Image (cartoon, rainbow, N blue to C red):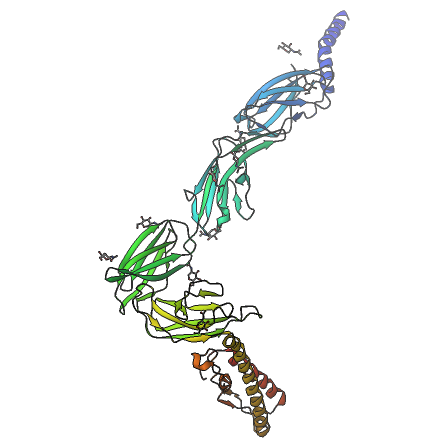
Length: 523
Ligand SMILES: *[C@@H]1O[C@H](CO)[C@@H](O)[C@H](O)[C@H]1NC(C)=O
Ligand SMILES: *[C@@H]1O[C@H](CO)[C@@H](O)[C@H](O)[C@H]1NC(C)=O
Ligand SMILES: *[C@@H]1O[C@H](CO)[C@@H](O)[C@H](O)[C@H]1NC(C)=O
Ligand SMILES: *[C@@H]1O[C@H](CO)[C@@H](O)[C@H](O)[C@H]1NC(C)=O
Ligand SMILES: *[C@@H]1O[C@H](CO)[C@@H](O)[C@H](O)[C@H]1NC(C)=O
Ligand SMILES: *[C@@H]1O[C@H](CO)[C@@H](O)[C@H](O)[C@H]1NC(C)=O
Ligand SMILES: *[C@@H]1O[C@H](CO)[C@@H](O)[C@H](O)[C@H]1NC(C)=O
Ligand SMILES: *[C@@H]1O[C@H](CO)[C@@H](O)[C@H](O)[C@H]1NC(C)=O
Ligand SMILES: *[C@@H]1O[C@H](CO)[C@@H](O)[C@H](O)[C@H]1NC(C)=O
Ligand SMILES: *[C@@H]1O[C@H](CO)[C@@H](O)[C@H](O)[C@H]1NC(C)=O
């Protein structure tokens, strides 16, 4: 009995701790630990990773363990009693980029399974540093319409954003930004300037940035238009043509080359101006061949028109004509005298009143249109008289050819508009008679079957006498200009009256046009 009692006591004794343990272990339930940590941090910054249980068992010491680097590295243990949160302070290194989690277990009790937190993805950001700008093409020089790519590279940095600046303000939206590149598409001269890129990375509470040095983008302009012309000068006993190649827009320097029609190069020059001129010896009255210029400034070659090189000295007769000038005000009578010579590539005209030469400008006159015309702004007692002009070669004024004299006074000058009036009146009268003629003709031919094709022909030697030739004509003969149209032929076989009326309107218009024209070749 005693033995049995002892055995029972021993048995109970031996059972008690296990029973106690058993009941203790059963009570302990560890929830899922919560890992709280920043999502991202700069490398070398100091961050706290905290692990806690929402409902930790009292009176137990909990062991928290932090794992990082995608679970490959144990960052530390932390024993916390009861409700304490385990805090792990880490100096962030680049290798920490990846998954973190923490484990919680009851200390010195392997019977209870450790519990793992959810994964937390942690990004390590390298602060940006050393932004640099490069261009394609390099150097950053392009012609209008071409593309240019700017690239921003950094010495260090991850998760970088880029901002592009031109002269320190943001670039136009029409340019495409792709990653660290800026594509300038079809540049214009407005895109030229100093570019820089701002590379930056940012977390909620801090920003790192780096700005590149400025890069000058140059937009060049191709040669747009090329004109060729020449002037002549005397060189000893011979003559020289100065052939001038004149470019419109275009970035300098420009290479000009002059070619003969036989392909021979006549001269070539790289200039820092928009023109070049080449001296070519010429003989008068001889065809020296055709020339053209070519200009290029690195973009494309531009060709001028072809210039026939022939110098003809003035010759033949010189004609002086008088025109009404309607640019002046109505209360002052102004007329324009015009001088023309039969031949001559470079004529120079000289103007005379009562045989004394006129300056290029006077109180009542101006010599205009490369000396071809003389504008009398007012005709009065001071400048009435006998006018004439003389033509000579501008490059070699040896021969002087004189026009006939033309007497101009107030009466003559004020008659000019009368001429115009009488011409207009003549036109009107002619029109009236024509319309009447058409009416009669139309009435006679109304019954005729309508052909598919209609045509009306109008013959008119319209007024080619707006100007009169010399002083003989000044004698009141203006009405002779009235016979403007010699004949009018018209076919109108329309049966519909409305349409024939339309045609009269057309004819009327055509006549008006003809009356306006100075010369109408017979159709
Ligand atoms: C961990 O940090 C939190 C706040 O940052 C603090 O309340 C807590 O007491 C800390 N835990 C320990 C064990 O120091
Ligand atoms: C962890 O995994 C992520 C994603 O797979 C990877 O980007 C990162 O580099 C890894 N980190 C380490 C330390 O291996
Ligand atoms: C757990 O056991 C270790 C030795 O194995 C001991 O140093 C430590 O104090 C114990 N901790 C607790 C909370 O009992
Ligand atoms: C410029 O870029 C645009 C768009 O990428 C392309 O369509 C065009 O052909 C490019 N122009 C030149 C001259 O390369
Ligand atoms: C642009 O910024 C740089 C650096 O901050 C400065 O040196 C430069 O003068 C600025 N240029 C203009 C046009 O504001
Ligand atoms: C670009 O910068 C340079 C030097 O800072 C300056 O001389 C130049 O005028 C600038 N050009 C433009 C177009 O802003
Ligand atoms: C101009 O004439 C001189 C001789 O009078 C000659 O030496 C020179 O070559 C000529 N100039 C040109 C461009 O032909
Ligand atoms: C070229 O000639 C045309 C017609 O004579 C003129 O309008 C134009 O201004 C000239 N261009 C240049 C660059 O001289
Ligand atoms: C002009 O021609 C020369 C010689 O052919 C060449 O070296 C130079 O690059 C050219 N310049 C331009 C702007 O085209
Ligand atoms: C020009 O000569 C005419 C007569 O010969 C004369 O009436 C007139 O006043 C002269 N004109 C001038 C401006 O001297």
